[in-house]
Image 1: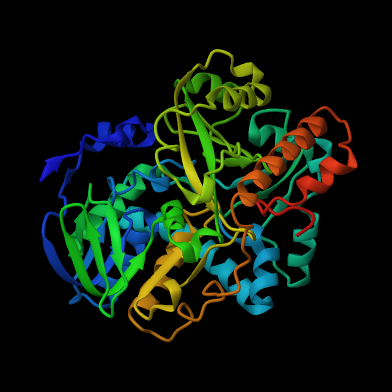
Image 2: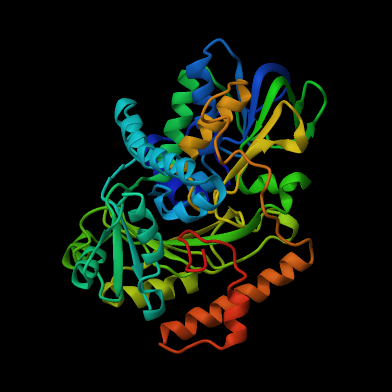
Length: 471
């Protein structure tokens, strides 16, 4: 077993976690082993799946194979927003129907609280703060974009959001650049890397074997599938692919997700300045643009600010395009300064980037890879994975255990997933749509109306973190 000293140290959240918890001891796969279930991917989805399987069937041998360190991928690089699927209700309703959409959304709201309970019961100080989510408008065009959702939810007597007056929006967000907004009190924030490492530790306590620094090089789809790494392999009755964006390497999944960057910065700590503008609680905040601004404070008095800037991976090839400091940190900082010009004394201390596996409808999907009866996958979390991976773990565990229940028959277990165009049309089209969105949102920020062609191209964008009017 070796001390971890890999690329994850470039990640602000992981570096902070190592400083508090120490570097974890890791073990690589260097031989052939047998298991009942092999899980490829040691992020939230893979670890929740492993935990659920061991909770239900403690005697099963469960192995997790991770390319880096658990949490070094998207699970340890995100903004730490723990939100429900009520904002996705329109998409859920379209795919699953009224009853199932409500059940999934309600379960996702319960998952937020479950994460807080999990952390408390297992002594995981992941900075869980259930201070809600503020969904805002930063241009006149965005104002009221949530009305169609709220009206639909009201028809079913569901009101997870509170409509705030403009003064309360400005107070809660600490800036008058937020023009309007609604608030979901049931949301939370976490330190994402500490949560991932906490899941890792808990899984190991349950008896899950974790091999890190062991990237899968080949998946043999034989009757009894086999996961091959550089120096070893695992043969098991069942295989679960919980690889997030890296799952796009499989042709069965490649056209069903687009891999796009999200870039983040963290400022220096200055709690006094944040207190002066009213940012005292851990509220999660984002606006309603497709190139989303999402941000929150941290308990030690920083601003962590992210932006989806649309760096696409050709043919789903993640490679090393999403490692290390963000090459787009300047654009992210510009958006931060525009929203918080009064925080000029807070410098940018760190930046990073990461891949998002975005589906056309903004929802994850689960199933069997190429109809193989014993190889399962979950993918397409579209930048909103912390809470929903709790549900995803239940879905994949139920599938792997051959259970017939509400999770194995969940509306997110589906084959009718809309696909993106083939390459190179997807890549070229994504650039055209990205530039149209940049133009559209830039004009709207200056209270100018985009031309008809720009609007038409921008409408081709897939569903983002928050629903658009057309959905």
